[in-house]
Image (cartoon, rainbow, N blue to C red; front, top):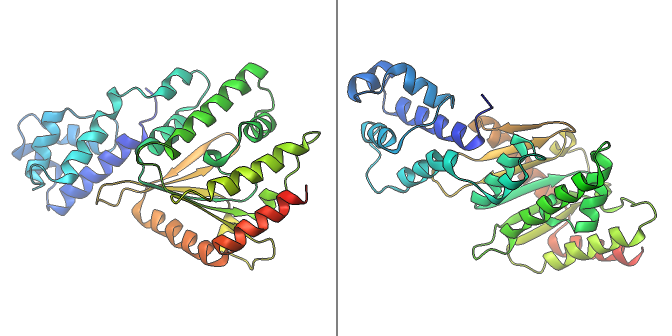
Length: 285
């Protein structure tokens, strides 16, 4: 059996918080909800199994979540995720489960905060820049494989132009803006222009963290935070590595990343000066 999706883990985590907030044990739930054995509730909370709509409503009734409450609607949405097929499923043969999770989460998120050290955030990349970086990272991939990965990255960007576009606040270390693409000088120039164009959109904010910045929390590496419409604290942080990705879902740990991002936002150049720096770098190429 594959790893549970981030959505299922978020659902299980919130159901556990609701149960504990109601002062109930697993045995208490078994006594109050017909057919809901403690072991079954435990497997739902640990994301080992999904949950049927009727069982979810029964639990939420016991946990005193009012009918029609926004939280109830959100949790039902999380529960239905297993049956949903997104466009990215077409690429399931080339993208990892963790990458599919990211795309699915981007599709649901109400905001994204991203700090990047050496790369432009994926949602802000041009196709040519994406191709050059994907080729470099996926060292043994065929041209066809790379082409399909570029298609995925470009398709992800639809969240920026949907009727309710995804708000993105990106902090990019200046080092990422100085990257050279061998024998293709126009790639980076066009990428810098793309950033300038995106900065004209009200839902996209881009700051540059200058190379001369003092030591800061971002020294630990890049990360992406995704927030969601529910009132429950179910934000998710993605930390990517060369061959894997880690999703941070613990509320206390997510809060630390939130504080780190605010620190980086304060240290980075203001929006207007960031735009000036990007424009100057573009013109110098």
